[in-house]
Image (cartoon, rainbow, N blue to C red; front, side, top):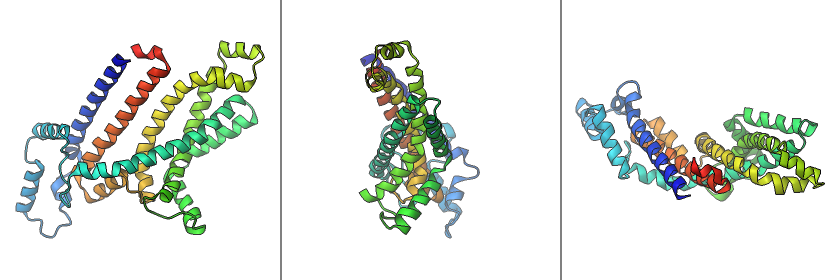
Length: 307
């Protein structure tokens, strides 16, 4: 197990290093001069002021030196300061990161609570009308844009019924965005759970258990559930990564104060240090969760520890 943890930690650290380097190159991939773009709306944007801005951001240095300095500073926890306000980027991101994790965890819980039972029902009724109905619902769920679903829920529950607040970061404000994310990704959970269970229920040991006269519930809970959990852990990792990316839009639809909303505001303001910091924090969060799920995968299936 220690070997597995060491391997996953080394792979995660290498991934984070690559992400920091790529995010450091981001400013050079933007067409045009970043300083000109950032100060385009400023009335006092003199050549001297723009030159001072380039020097402050280190944009007057060679590209390789800029990337190297950014990597060194980022590894020490220094992601720079915001263009507008001069506040530490990492501090702003870490202050809002708990809200983002709370929304992602809530959306994941909704997705699992809805998607897994639907997947179980579809697998147990494979080829029947129930199976086709569940898969139709899953296809519709995958096809519906999350922002559209969020706007519909806002229109119904906040504006017409006035049951829930329109915007904010309280517990009541969490319900609609979590429901939006959960409903969107429960379709993915249902499809993958069904696919996993269909394969497991076709195994020889499942047919043997049925031949012994065990009830369908016993076969499912005693013989099929543990192997299914191994694949469901993988589903959880995929859904969490999708949730972290998808909630950038949802946070703005519901005015939820997470790092996704902060990133969109930074993009609109062309605040490149904040955008770079968001990419790193977002990627590190996904890498850490993926490592934890890999370790859990090794606990559930000891055969994977040697890989």
